[in-house]
Image 1 (cartoon, rainbow, N blue to C red):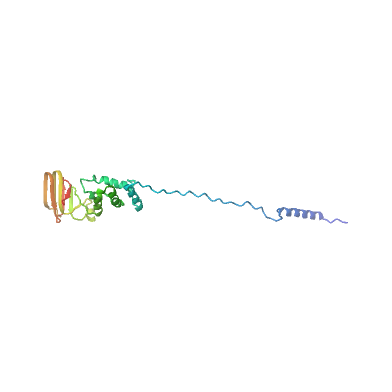
Image 2: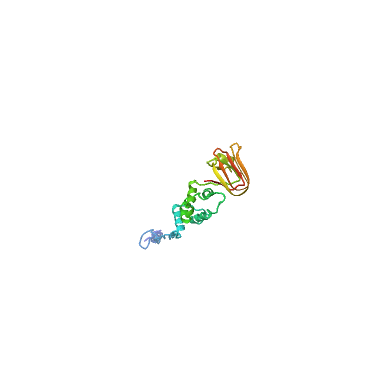
Length: 237
């Protein structure tokens, strides 16, 4: 019997195909399926701790009451002071001394700048608690209805109203004095005063080489009032 040519090659090819097909199967017989990887576990970040807000502690007594009120109402305290009560106490201590020889107490309060911002509210609430004897002074300063004193050593325009913006622009040092009767008291030497018209003509004047009390009445029709080397001029009630 004649052998078929090429039969060995065909058999070899068939064997190789079987081997290759076996390599493409997994243990379960599935073809081309890869082994699954382990599942990914997501870890949530640890939350940051929430800071606790401590409630402010207020001192017992009127100081603490004022500080609590300041926080509740949102009053702004100047950086010079640690609290609203410190500000009020400082004003209480300053009232008997500050500018005592040049202005009335409510005048000092009104013109010193302490009423600016939250100062007015803090003093209205705090002074009756911490230094009640100055309560009337604070109320007068806030109302604007208070006694004004006038320094010697310059010229005042006679007017019941403060200087206008135009007058201040022309002369920033412009000041006014309302008509009325004023007295200057103290040990005075070479005190000179004069009342003049708007044109500068002298209506009345005097030069005192030595005096302890001088009284002058300024009329509404006067233009200016000038004094030199006299004591503070205070209105006569």
